[in-house]
Image (cartoon, rainbow, N blue to C red):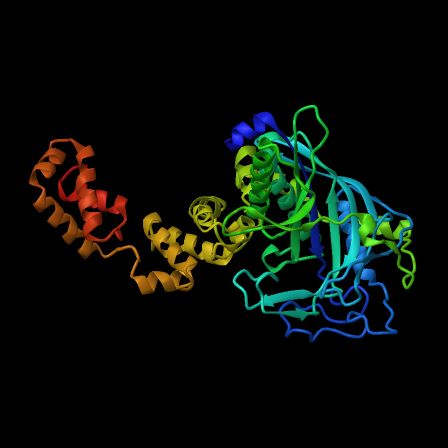
Length: 493
């Protein structure tokens, strides 16, 4: 069946579990640094390596950041809650358990509103809780980078113990064929909210924000089907693709009379499908129990009120303000938001571009290239400063749109900033009057019949001669200037 046919038969239910690494200077339970990209195992201590006798101490800044996230997601903040031990063995867990929260999360019962195709959808937030991140395992010697087929595995514990916030939605039914787009829009909105708070850089490509996508199918009127969990999806585009892929995969199995098994799966960036990982554990398997080495968390109401009063402008409110500033419609603004381009355009304008110019490049040429490369817009290879510099060259008359697209191609390819690419490729607009006059006179001489028609008043025929001049100048002349000079040389006012 096609995707559209599947959605006439089955109803998808989607849930998302998003992990956000907080940008605190130190780890969750010790004083080790959290700098990204440090040499492996150089940011560790007896606490985050779980050496005997080492005891954890709570990071107040991480608790504050978690409360801020909860408030921004319209959650209720617990007056009293505890940490718990989530037990499982894996090499990237030094303690063989993760210090997390189970039945007493810090934030509960929130929601996020997103707009897709002009309709608003409310995504319920079940919980927001604080925990610690794991170490990072590198499997080498194989073809896939996974443990199967690898000859050895290396573990970097620098990430172990970094504060991690998990945001869990309630199951979201009733999304129909828009389920993939709504899932993507939710993660984009969540990223914007957290970024606005300033508590994380939420860089999905670096793993500081990653998403587990839960998907199930059921026949209309029946109970929800068995869900699968696609782990660690690390881009907005991949969230959408993962949901769509699972809907198609599960429908094929159900149509063949098969059964869906509860399991974790891994999204394959190259193919766009998911592969089986392991059977999904339940809470009983993790043997949760209260963490005995940490005191309970009891945020004072006055502190919570203080954090709430300091919350920044909501991204949805900001978008409404920017929409007015940029002079665009609600539909256009929603397209910008869905493309993940709001901050990119805003930063481009701050770097000196007009609003129209910034939006034209990000939503046009760069969006097209992002789709071709199958990457998020922010990872396409151009920065807001470079796009602003490109638009300034266009405004100054040094580039026309055709040449600017070629310059942008060089920027994305890593050839340098726009001015450097323009110079190295020799793409500047020809403004030499003498050179343009010569090219125009040659075009007139080579096309006497067309020139005669123009002299007789058929000015529309000038387009053919303008095209000839543009070809001679390799597109580096200004078309309007060429047309004006052409009519002048032919004595046509």
